[in-house]
Length: 44
Image (cartoon, rainbow, N blue to C red; front, side, top):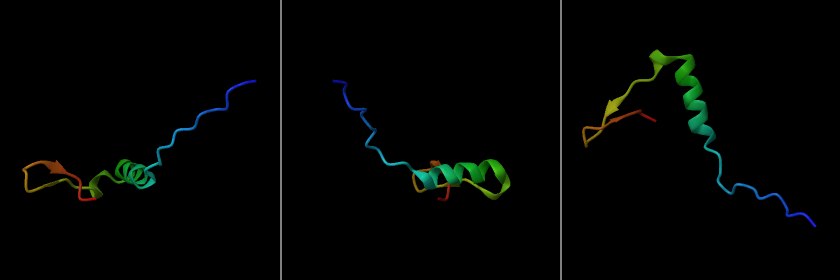
């Protein structure tokens, strides 16, 4: 008898994937900001 295939229980971050695609298509539309800890971050 063979073992059943184990599935990854993590959910996909579809929103992050879509943001990355948009950033590639429209690089000028995404800007970085500086947060209160002086760290660079994207606004979304």
